[in-house]
Every structure is written in C-alpha cells, then in structure tokens.
Length: 446
Ligand code: ADP
Image 1 (tube, rainbow, N blue to C red):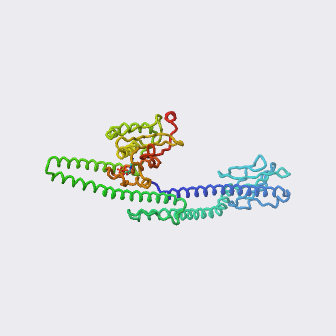
Image 2 (cartoon, rainbow, N blue to C red; image 1 turned 30 degrees about the vertical axis):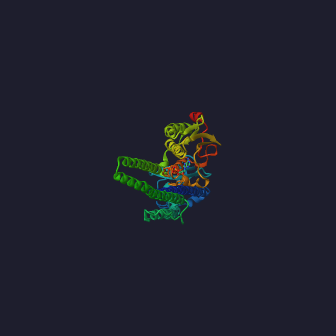
Image 3 (cartoon, rainbow, N blue to C red; image 1 turned 90 degrees about the horizontal axis):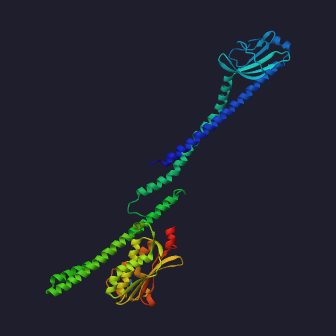
C-alpha cells in the first residue's frame, strides 16, 4: 500500500525543485555571460584609451601606482626600448603575439587580457584576473536567485496546503464510513465532494443500495420460506399421529402412504427453496456460454417422458435446427424442467405438451405450451411471484416456487417470461426470449 498524498506531494516538490534549479542555473549562466561581455568591453575600452594617448603623455604616466589588490593591470611595451609603463606593482605581463582577447595564466591563476597596438608599434595590454568575473557573476546571481529560492519555498508551502485540503474530502468520507454502524446501509452524503471523489462515493452508494435490496430480499425470502415450511411440517406431524393411532393394518398403511406423500412434497419444497437461494444475485457470476436450446429441450423431453407417460401425456420438442443462445446450461435446464413439470402436473390425462425453440427477430426463443386448464388473464402476472398459486389449481399439490425460479433464470439471461394461450387456443404457453447467436456453424467458425 502507498500514500497517494505523499506520492503527489513528493512528485510536485521534486518538479518544483528541479524547475527552480534549472531556472537558477540558466540565470547564473546568463549573468556570467553578461558579466564576461561587460568586463571584456571595459578591458577593450581601457586599452583603446591608452592606445590613443600621445607618446608625450607617456612621460606623465607613473608606473606601479596601483596596489597589488587592484584587479586591472595596464602595460605599455615598446618592442625596441622595452617596458614603458605598468600600472600595478607586479612582474610585467607576457607580450601577446596577436591583437585582441586571450586567456593566460599568471602565477598559476587564470587572467583575461586584451592586446592592442598604437601607431608607434608599442603594445598596450590590459589584463584582469578571471576570478573577478566569477565573483561579480556570483554576486549578481545572489541578488536574483535569493528571491527565486524564497518563491520556491512559498510555492512548496502552497502546494502542501492545497493538496492537503484536496485530500481532506477523502478523509472526511473515510471517517463517515468508519463512523456508521454496520446495520446502516443509507447512502453516503455527496455534499461538497470534489468531482474526482464523487464517482467513487456514488459507486459506493449504488453498492450500498444493492446490498440493502439484496439483504431485504434475503430477509423476506427467509421469513416466506419459514412460513411455507410450517404448513407441510404441521401436516406431517398430524399424519404421523394418525399412523401411530391407527387401529388396523390397513388404516396404518393408508396413513403411512399419506405421510410418504407429505414428505415428498416437503422435500420438493426444500429443494426448490434451495434452488431459489442459489439463484440469488451473488450466484449469478457463472459465465454465459453459447449452447443449443433445441438440444437442451430434447434432453429434458427424454427425462420427462416417463412421468408424462404415467398421465398418458404426449411431450415433444419441436424444431430440427440448433438454436444458439448464450446461457448457463444448468440454470436453463432447470427453467425448461420447471415449465414441463408444471405442464405435466396441470394438464389432464391424455393431454399434449410442446417445447418449441426458434429464432425470431434475431432473438432465440423457447416456448413451452400445453392444452391443460390454462391461466386466467388476471392471474398471469402474479403466478411468477414466490409462493403464489392460482385459484383454480390449488387442488393439485405445489409449492408456488416453480415459476419464481423460471423468472429468476430468465432474468439472469437478460429475458422476461411471458404467458399466453397454449396449444390450439387451449391451455397455457410460457415464452422466454434470449439474445440470439447467428447459427451453430457461425459459432464454431468464430
Ligand atoms: P406450483 O406449480 O408449485 O404451484 P409454480 O410457481 O410453478 O408453483 O406455479 C404457480 C401457479 O401458476 C401454479 O400454482 C398454477 O396455478 C399456475 N400454473 C403454472 N403452470 C401452469 C400450467 N402449465 N397450467 C396451468 N396453470 C399453471
């Protein structure tokens, strides 16, 4: 883990220091160049003023009148009669072979020298130790660089404060989350949040509201399940008591038969409750893969045909081409299973059930129809609610969970089940749409 604030501050201060350093360096070199140019100019001016002196004036010049610590030295040298004049008490300057500027070493120190020649052929040299230049440049630079340094420190301070304030909003949000009780799933306040943090908080709020919804759904489900389980368990207790009290073998046998039926129903209810809870949002993470709905329908028909045969019901999967959809195979098998199971239970003996799979408007669809009692218009929306059972069919044992599971599976696949008329205008039909895949062939080649 790392601190974003510290990283940001270090980066900003590093950039600030680097910029100040580079600016300072550039300023120093500019000043140094300027000082060099000015002092070169003054060497030249002094040399030129001596160059224009009349030879008679040389008599008035007094050699060595300047002390050793004076930085400028002027020397006039006559190639015939030798040294004519030197302004400072020192060994005379070396005689340069060419006119103009040169850099030389005197007593181990670097000097800058300007050489000129007057009309008499005498050589005029004006020299200055180079150190004078760097000292002057440093002196000048100090006056400029000091304010720059102060400005850098001030800018650093301002950055520190601004970054600190920016992160305050984040720490306020963190404190708000830390302070809240685990039971509270209310949204966090978005007031006064900067635009960089508000998406994070609104994503958090979305998560909280989803969590709230899912917790409420789980609570509702647990209480509904407990309520629904109570009835069959009470029935089982009563049937057990009946079996215990039975006077004849025949009566006991009958009571046991009822008890077995009751246990079967309770087991079905428990297994459907379990299926329902497994289909909850956090269990939706399985990837949706391309699969053939027609092949799946055929496989369910094979499984169900024995049960259907007991009621002499004809069950068949219609269609002979693969219908490819993106899905979770186990969940879709459960969906088709539940629809067929309902159709078999509610359809009278000798009835018919058809499972059609087809593509319509580029959407894969599956439709399970029967010619049973059908579902009245007024009940068609409600039958998908958990534990809801339509009025006319309550004599047939059921849990009221089958269609809720169908709806949940359809939702996981981005679909919604619809109910309509069944075979030849009789019975019921349940249709679910899926986003389609072009064809099995295309699927294989992609
Ligand atoms: P269950 O069948 O266990 O009662 P479901 O959720 O599967 O629960 O179905 C809810 C209700 O919808 C059933 O009680 C029944 O009234 C009605 N229903 C479902 N399928 C059919 C069907 N094929 N024909 C007639 N009614 C049906």
